[in-house]
Image 1: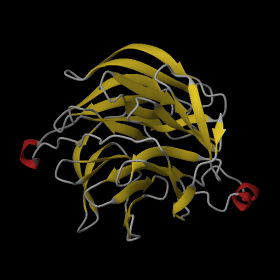
Image 2: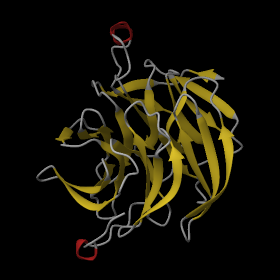
Image 3: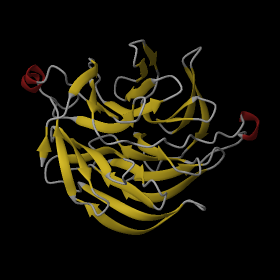
Image 4: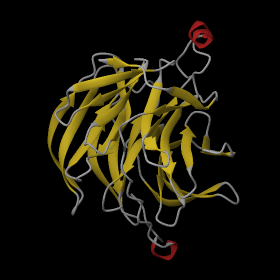
Length: 303
């Protein structure tokens, strides 16, 4: 079923790969990344905008308990120093192949930051790895991914969702999740989209999974059994991730991308690369913050 709720442009931009929107309730603001544009952005609901240019590609974003912005970028986990704009490495990984980078991620109820990598040249090699970072150690949890995406965790913390956006795969999986020890089991197919490829995702307060259908012009809501409940059509073909935010967590913010569109498509989609805000009757829930280990305990942290 398709619906037509109120959709507005939260930020009219030209992000090459807008990704990883993250609601910051303490600032009443939205963070997001432009991966290929090598930047992290923050915009308040009141309109103030701040862009942090980077020397590397940022991927997944998370907020630490002290409010520090954390990103899984390039081949490691970094903390953003807002005063200088520098990224300070917290931990690194040794990728199985060169030319890999982090992509999508989520923080679990215990405060671990989960994020996965992908091989950039054509995304042909199933070399992507899903990692969990507890603030001190980075542990590989799953390998064999191509275009890792769709990380989300059910509200009760018992189900972990993961997608692979590669055209040959286009699958969202569900896992049983033991949050106490950070382990995944019982991998199963949760959903295969009928239109578009599954990109970034989030879960609402009712336990339903929302994902961006890349090349599908929409975001989709699935029930806990993986059945499509509704779709919200967007003015862009390449949405990348929905996230709940706003004062009562009933606004869905959606990032989008320009990369991959030809000149004709860009002419038809002048808002490609913008961030959208969708007013809904559905609410999200407050996300756990990353439990950052003090810097003095991070010496020697690695893969």
